[in-house]
Length: 192
Image 1 (cartoon, rainbow, N blue to C red):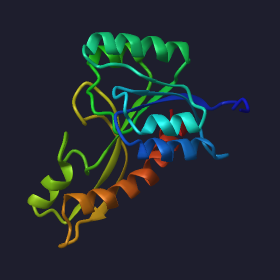
Image 2: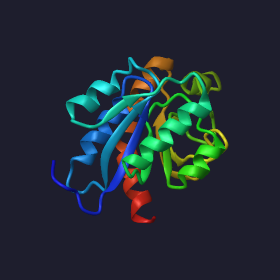
Image 3: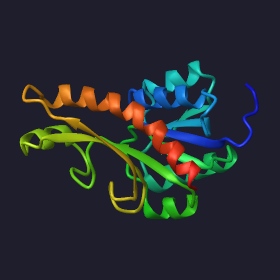
Image 4: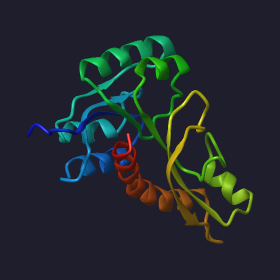
């Protein structure tokens, strides 16, 4: 692999299928990309996203999540070893502690499937439908100590159709997530 000058060493944290990871890997290989993914970490040994990392020759590791402090200590050591400048959470289903965020002291981004500050946490699609919202969407934001509350970098709306259920809305929003995450990274790093 060629040495990418000026690109930020990036770690992607996942818990599941890794569709946002796949989109970030694709973006990282483009000329205009400002990141080089040097590490993928999962709290789930069976996360499908780990196989994308393998296929792309990206170092990847699973860390058992039985104790938050032990998990975060191991993660910090890995981030230091790989000289990571940016963390992207991509379907990572654990909440990082305020202590971890302070110790890492570099940007941590998350993508969330709602128009924050609406619907922090889980079940965002069903909550938007139940509340008869006209729109939902996706948000990329900086991670801080409060759940889904950091500074918003980029948002994109998706119209909620009368025929939508949680699954159909999730599918449409996921497509938007794949588009806006790379754009948000570019926006963040251009202004950083």
